[in-house]
Image (cartoon, rainbow, N blue to C red; front, side):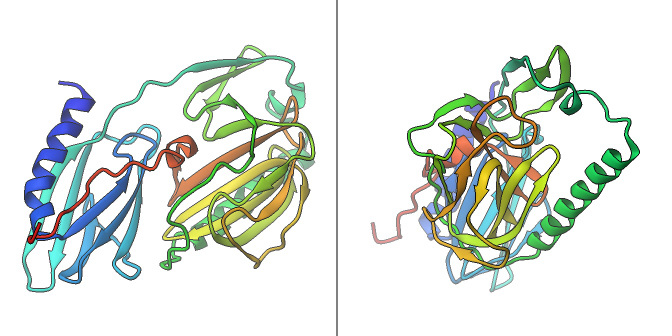
Length: 283
């Protein structure tokens, strides 16, 4: 029994369990690397996903699934009258490509031996992790849709692919690479708050945006940064320019999306998919 069949079964029981009562609407992708936006009605007190409470912001919530997220998921809804609804379902399982990239400078592929460089890389990793841990506690949701951050670019690297750099296997690619001429505008994919900028060894120049609800996006290998920490941006605002800083073999944007430590496929966010459309009892 494959993932698509499980997904179909989920739609069947959700339509009978949730739709008729107008309790929940889900928008997004129920698959590995997917992201779901949910809206509940006023009868709902709490939402739990895999037995972890998901904060509600004006009856809205966000849930993301990692690249290799387990397929079995549990959704629990607690109503204000004390009733508890729970259902289990399966995410769609995905297959990922293998991507070979040559001519990457050795210093970006081989394990560094210079102590100062090792210290720099470690500090940069800790800094990014610390900021993301704060993002995880942001309850207010700023984003409800996404646009591609580089117009008329060419996708050269996809999410989840196994990277082999100069013949050396690396960690899976956790974002979307969009090639474009150097200096091309990079836009905020969704509304949010700029929480970190910098020029890191691997990332080069980058911008990190908090979209609320534990969701954030990062834009790396920039030529220029046009925003400041603490600045609120609207969807489509210019935040920088395409470059080739950091570990890069040519001008492109690496766009990554993260939900509470889970890596999300940015390309799926561009395909807004109504998993459910709930009709009221009167329809």
